[in-house]
Image 1 (tube, rainbow, N blue to C red):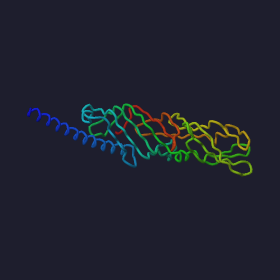
Image 2: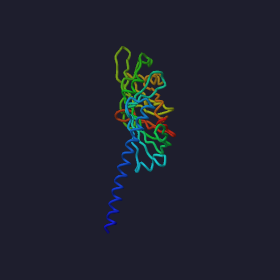
Image 3: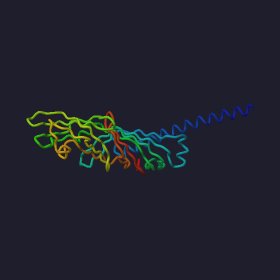
Image 4: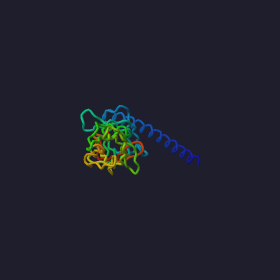
Length: 244
């Protein structure tokens, strides 16, 4: 009985030591991966990298990590216009089946899914422009974006009516993604001062689009919906390069 008791104590101690070593190793690996990702993507701050699953050391031995979460704050994405970027407030992605080199200088995820949040103020920068001629003496431009409910955006236009007076006109708009571009399209056109404007002219002021390109690892825009503090974009990708 005494020998069995000693054996059980040894097993427990070894188990505790293994857990400690495993957690130290995963903490070190997360730091190395975060530093590599910061350098590769030229990020202003170090991203959050969290390696899921236990034990970590057996995943290392296999050369593949089951699940890695990456969080990036304030990522400036390209827009397709030279020198112009759009800031993503929060970019989060879950990477599955991540293969890597021993020094973490290269890592590739078989698949990735996540979300990117763009604030309304940031999206508005692309929509704001000089007033557009709406015809019949009216001009208009977008001056505000907000959550319109049911996944839609409330677009507010500043409309100048004949005679010089200004009127704030809210329009509920559908938001969608096509070819890595967020598109905002008015659902219904309002009457202004009892006048129905030509649709094509009105849409030149109310509708707009915003390209969001070159996201980390080559992930792409998938779906989008309006939420309280901005547009939430679902992103996905395959063979996503985290580093190297």
